Length: 398
Image (cartoon, rainbow, N blue to C red; front, side, top):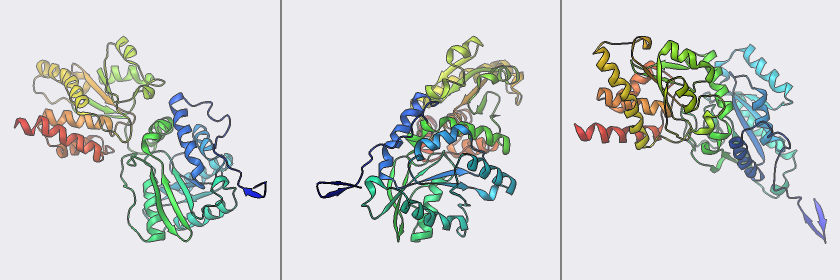
């Protein structure tokens, strides 16, 4: 506090930036982090949600420190019910080496979880022990929830709200990363003390968390039954981002002749082939840029994508007749359709392809996709796009 002419004025701090920790981020991620930093002046504590099954990389630690260097910070390790003791100890040890000590293990599906009951009391203690700067006169507390998509941020908000206010859901929950579409400000979770949560918007996080979530997908492939890609039929493979190092394998083993990417430019720039690079391998390339997490492909892009895939399907039909082909190496060519994880944006396009190919409803197409690639999960925006596509191309022509 500073005394100026008899008036006591709080030392206001308008910017919260940890120096020299943005050094490794590509430009698009730096911009997103700066946008999030601007919001910190209205936040008293940060709750960082992390999947307890997945080890935390040093780069992810840099990302976290960029946001929490000047604010009280609690790491909430979710999905503890899916880990064993050895895994948990390894994650905690990693965090301790990073200088992080405020950790709580949780199972967000368990309404009796002891860890959940510790969050609010620990947050209050950390806030009271901190310098709140421009929020010093505020009686209520405000906490921001951060974390890579699909680790339980919305579930955490709803569980806290239920535990302390005995109220229902304040934000949607689902298996698709990034259901949160905008900042949900002032979600009250407690009356005594009065505490509000801010859920970080998926649009901002799409760019900021691209590399951490890509790392998450790589780890999930190793520790679960997920495949990096799956063959859907004789023409199409649905998969995650094809790394440059996998180019030869895809061409030799799967007879890839074309690629459809639903990624934005920044997602392809460092790790995946450009159109020019694919064409050097005699592979056709179509990019249908769609923002990750919260956006479905437009109807125009879905139609263009289906038409592109059908070029190769029609060639297969002319040369091989009606044989049921399950091995891509025995057919004229395969189209690799992908986004970052191969579960939302690209799955929407492949579902549209199946709708036109088999005269299926959206539900039939997605059910089939889930048989081939079980972790495909679509939310409202994607389902709406599928139903609109079905109405335009199947119902109106029947």
